[in-house]
Structure formats: structure tokens, C-alpha cells
Length: 407
Image 1 (tube, helix red, strand yellow):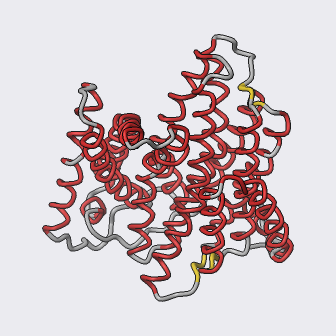
Image 2 (cartoon, helix red, strand yellow; image 1 turned 180 degrees about the horizontal axis):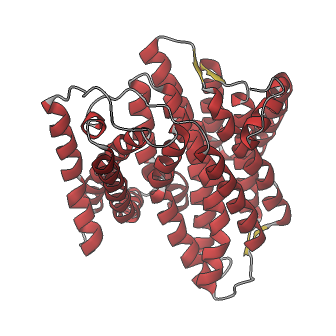
């Protein structure tokens, strides 16, 4: 696609917004590079503002990238970069676990952080986007685009495989190969999706008015700038929040499982909610589903590799105890229920309420997590049965096969 298009009107506010978004990342990046010690509360603010600015830069880069590549691939790149904080935090815990040995506190923290991030994404992120969208557009549901069957299919594949991990009680390099392969197949498939130029608003119009080469270079720079900013501030941001909570007497395990992931997931939440407010609910939910796919494949799949390198025992698996097994089963159960909800290509308000209620129940009353797991699985079976006619089309779309009608 070329840049031969009518020039878009760009207001002065767009330039100001763009400059401000870049400037607010600088203090956090500076502290991340120099490792200067600041008060936990101040650190949380500085690093949080940096993530906020980087999130906006990422969203503009993703929208501009849709001129040259498919929306699905652009959003997947955005989701991968936006979730860098979660990778950084979890890899730190996994690396420490390899050095401490199985049974050390970091082993628990690595799984807690990963499962907490996954459940937050589905139990809070998806409903938040849905509720913002239906409020902004005065609708009862969010209708997904047909192309999103690809994300749903690969999320289903990863989720079904994830049930094998708690069954054998460990994460090993075979899991890594399978899960990373699913991610590679997913990326390859979305790269084949058609390119459709979106409507541009705000600072992204500056990029859209450029010729091909400078636009592509600047778009790449935006991705790199935001990615570096997020990578530099992710760990100190999470640590600042954890230290702040610890000073208030909050359990460190709970902070690692819920507060740190909430902080590290904030870039993608900000991007998705911003898009939903603008009425672009499809792209918003696509970004969060894509993020779920890459966390449920690439993030989980690389944990045994990081552990093996850190521990120096390359073939030693990342072994799970009873608590970690339960956490993984609950997370997988929520995921398969989420797939069941989405398989008919819509997300209704009452389905969003179900996601929030079940997530809140297991969060507030930890003693009923087994019961919530059973509810997730039962509801998943019900929804998959109700939407069974949509299963085959999603599979065909995911594999890139033509429909029976030849479409």
C-alpha cells in the first residue's frame, strides 16, 4: 500500500500530545538506566507515568503500522511489546528460582506472577474494555470481527495444551517447544491477513501523512522507543508497588500475584481502554486477546528455558508443588471458559459480568478457588455446546483453510 492518499488535517494538539508522551517517559527511563534509589511511592509515580506515555506511543505506532501490514499482525506486535513488563518481571523471578533451587520463594513468585497476570487480563481487562465500549457506544454487546477467529483458535489450542502442565506437575523444554510453536503458527497466520487501512485520529495522523519510507522508519522508532521505555521501567515499577504495599503490611505473595501484574499489564490496559473509548472496541479486545495468546504460549513456554539456563541444569524441569498446580488449573479453566464465551464472535454485557464476578470471587475468597475452577469448566462446556456450530469455522479460519462455501 502506498502513501498516495488525501492529506489528513493535523491539529496543533496532536503535536503537543506526541511530544508530551515522549517527554514523560524520560524520567522513568533515566532512573531505570542509572538505578538511582528513590522512595517507593515516588518511584511508583515516576515509573507509572513513563508506562502511561509509552502506552500511548505504542498505540499510535500500531495504528500507523496498519497502513503496511494487517491489523491483526500490528495489534499482535503491539500486544507483544506492551506485555514486555510482564515478561521482564516473570523472568526475574524465574531466574532467581533457578539460582535458589526448586522450593525457594522465587519459584512460587514466578508462577504466581504469571497466573495472576493471565487471570487479571481475562477477569478485569476484557470486561473493562467491554463495559467502556458499550457505555461509549450505547450498545449491549461487542461484536468481534470475523478475522478474530484466528486469535480465538490459537488461544483455544494453547489453553487445551496448558491442562497437561499441571497434570504432569512440571514445565520442561518439551513444553517450551510446543507452546512456542503454537505462537509461531499464530504469528505466521495473522501475517497472512489482509491489509485494511484504518481511520486515523490524533497524533497518528502525523505519521499517516508521511511518505512510505519516513513513516515506516518513524513507526519502527515509536515501537522501539516505547519498548525500551517499558523494558527499563517494568521491574522497578513493579518493585516500587510491591515495596509500597509491603510497607502497609500486605502479603508479599499477594502483591506479586496481583499488584505487580496489574502494574505490568497497565500499558495494554491503557491502550485497549483508549481504543474502546474511541469506539474501536474490536481492536481493543483484539489487543487483549492477542496478549492472552502470547502470554499463554510464549511467556509460559520460555519459563523452563530461563530456569534451565539460570540453574545450570539444562534438562531439569521447573517442578510445581500443589499450590502452583491449583493456580495453573484455575487459570486454564478461566481461559477455556473465555474461549467458550467468544467462540460466537460476540461479548455481551452479562458475559462480562460473569467474568468479573467469578474473578472477584476467587480473589476475595481464596478458599473457594476449587469451586470456582469447577464452575469455569462447567460453564465452558455449556458455552462450547451452545456455540458448537461456530467451532469448525474458527478452526478453519485459524488454519487458513477455505470455508465449505469457498470463501
